[in-house]
Image (cartoon, rainbow, N blue to C red):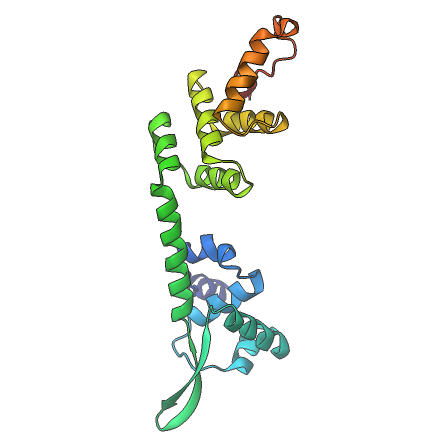
Length: 213
């Protein structure tokens, strides 16, 4: 038994962290990802669906469906090649690496864009991958870069440099219909001119809320 355990420990399939962290962005399902890990680690590129089915204990029809889906997504391609004068089906994984490289290139481009540079300058440090995703999430939901930077300035003014705080500012502004600098200025003037707000009872204290948590 101990020999079997040691053998199991020594046999490892490899997958790049870039693919592991980004396969969802390429619209690759978990089942398709398992197939890809298998294919990447094969010494031969000859397409043998029965072998894949046996090795992974996946129904042959499911294997064919997964391979077909990956081909439709232009992740892999089944090609015909002559091997030892025999025409054989082979799997080309170059499309996978090209799509992954393109996806990573887009991330780098976003990283270098002005809004990210502004955040890093204000925070005095490099943004984490999670922080990039949060900022991207704001942009993807239609929040303008102008409003995001205004919220960043608001946070910096209050001595806070975390995205949770900024997210709450954006959320509160969204509830008020604030979309740009003019709206922010109008809201501030309205708040200052409203005598009911002088005791600040109805003012949302982002600063203390963020610090307490």
